Length: 415
Ligand code: NG1
Image 1 (cartoon, rainbow, N blue to C red):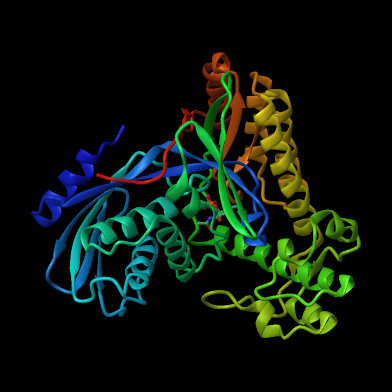
Image 2 (image 1 turned 30 degrees about the vertical axis):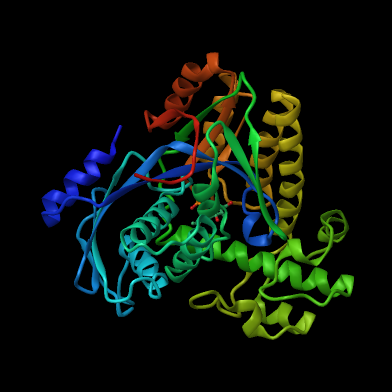
């Protein structure tokens, strides 16, 4: 287990300074509500007891320097925003520093990051990093930003690194309560802690296949975001609704109304085709926060819509099951989610499917991939007595990839 001390020692060793504060920023697992946040539909994640520690000391020169125990090199980020060339993990740091341009201009900081949160897909290490770094800079520079603002700015910062993220991860890392999941609604925005009943334990297992947000997984994720926008364009047209931009399925009508029409959508479409058909300017359909989707490149449409709409209903069912203490029904929402992610969203892998099946056979109430998919981690909900068997079953499938119990922790803390 990594403690604040590891980040503090790394700061001392690299920059010869002691920290003014250290921020603990947890990872998260999403219990259910996958690929719904960017559609403005609800999610049900919880923060976990695996975290990044961010130790920081303010400096007088106008630059932020960041070292991370998990990655090579030192990110050197000038305060004037001239760090567009940053790549990989450093691009996330650059996005955060840029989004703090209005706080203590001219001041700098040295930062060291360490932790026991695995990166490689599904546990939100990128958002723990972004939120943790932003909260640390805010504390070191006395910025006085509140948790909502930090979560929103961290999400914007991650978008400048090229992933069109929906905002769930940053919000749960900011607002989670120990012992609870957090239901987050995006339209209108609100969040509510949902107590986790006794008799419910969670196991997270790596599939052994990384899905880092730098390459193919980012592209596959962004393709689902575009597919959701194309589906929204067609459905808004059919419903005679004047949409707002960027298009989001959750904004156009009640989901049961939209659901009735989703089966009729075409399986795939391009921005060009659907823009012409729904009379929507192509630039509004294809544009991301940075860059855009090629207008002649097909994206999945019907499957994405069918998954997202059904997943929103599973979030409601999961919250009701937790509130009623019905763990079997809760497990069924996880299994239903995985099936839909596999069949409709097409973001599972053979390894994730086998991993979930093995964990169910070992006594889990339910199991599913967690996070964006395309590799990464799976989650099982099980009775506390089944935890060891579920871990053993998971490792039997993956040949010993990490699998461990997780508990619902609180949001980030500044110490
Ligand atoms: P992961 O795969 O844990 O990074 C991503 C998005 C979320 C959400 C899920 C899918 C980022 C930082 N996070 O999570 O906003 O859309 O996929 O439900 O991109």
